[in-house]
Image 1 (cartoon, rainbow, N blue to C red):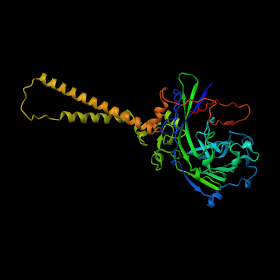
Image 2 (cartoon, rainbow, N blue to C red):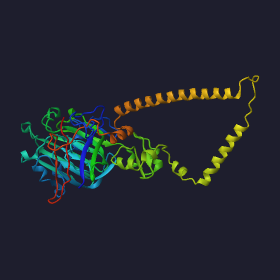
Image 3 (cartoon, one colour):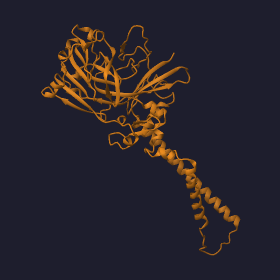
Image 4 (tube, rainbow, N blue to C red):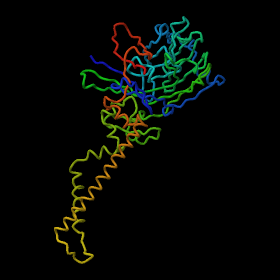
Length: 436
C-alpha cells in the first residue's frame, strides 16, 4: 500500500511552525501579489463591461446547462468536471477541473482534503453551504469554447442571515478567466475566515514526490506553491466583474531557438532531454529536476548540443596544437642576468624557494577559507529571503529531519473537502494539516 502525505509549501520570508512538532515537515507561508502570469482588469457596477461579462445561463441551451445535484445539496463537497476544450492555466493545458461548493474551482491533478490551499480559481472562496437553502444551486455550462460555473443563491453556513450570494467564473479556451458578481450582500472583508479561508484570485503549484527510505513503499507528496494572484476584495461588489488575461509563459515555446530567444517576463531555458521549454517553475518541476535539466541549461545555448557530440578525432588536434604552443613558449624564453652572480649555495637557494612557497600556500589557504565562509553566509541569506529559488528548493527538498516543521494529521480545524465519486471507487488516503 502506497500512502501519500500531501504537504503545502508556499513562498515565504518567514517560517510558521509548531515547536512541539519539529521533526516532520517544513511549511512556508506567504501571499504573492505580482502578476507575472496574468493581468487583471476590474469593472464596477456602472461599467457596461460588467453586464457584458455576466453570462445569463437561463438563455443558454438547456441541454448543456447542468445543475449538479450533489453539490447543490451538500457542504464542503467537490466534483470533477470534464472540459470539451483545452483550457490554458498558468501555461498548462487542462481538460479536467474540480468544482467545490466553497465558491472556487480546484485545478490540481491530485485531489486531496486541502483543496483551499493552492491550485485554485476562486471568484469568492468562503464557507458556503448550498444545503441550507432549497434555492441554492451549483450550475455549470460548457458551450465548447468556454465553461461557466455559477454559484447561485448560496449562503454562508455560519451567517445565513446575511443573505444569498450569486456569482460565477468563466474559463475561456484562450486562457481568459472572468469573475462576475450578480449579488454580493455584504463587503467581502466582513466574511469570517475562522472556519474557512476567504480568497479571491488564482494560485498554482507543483507536486514533488519523495521516497521515505526508512519506510518501504511509502512516499511523501509535497506541494510547492510557486505563484498566486490575490485580487482586491474591496472591488468585489454586486454587479461588478474582473477579467484576467494570461501572459506568455515558457511552456508555449516548442523549439530551442524560440525558447532561449524569447522576450517575456521569464528566463526560459531549453531542456533537450525533455524537449521542453521552461523557467524551472511549473507543474513539471519534478521531471525538470529528475532529468538534470538545470545542469543542462546552464550554458543556455542551442549550439552546446552539437559541440558536445564532437568525436575524439576532431577534438584531439586542438589539444595537440595547444601543447606544442605552450612548449614553444616555455622553451624559447631566455633568462638574462640583470646582476652579478650571488654567493648563495644551491642548497640555500632551494631552501629559500621552499620557504617562499610555504608562505604563499598558507596565505592562499587562509584566503580560500575566508571566501568559502563568506559564500556560505551569502548563500544562507539568499535562501532565507528567496525560498522558492533553485538553491532554496534544493535545500528544502533535502533538509534534515531536525528542521522545524508542521505536522499533518487528521481531524484538524482546516477545511476538509470530500470528493464526489462513483460508488465502489476507492479514494486515496490523505492527511491534512494541524493548526498551530
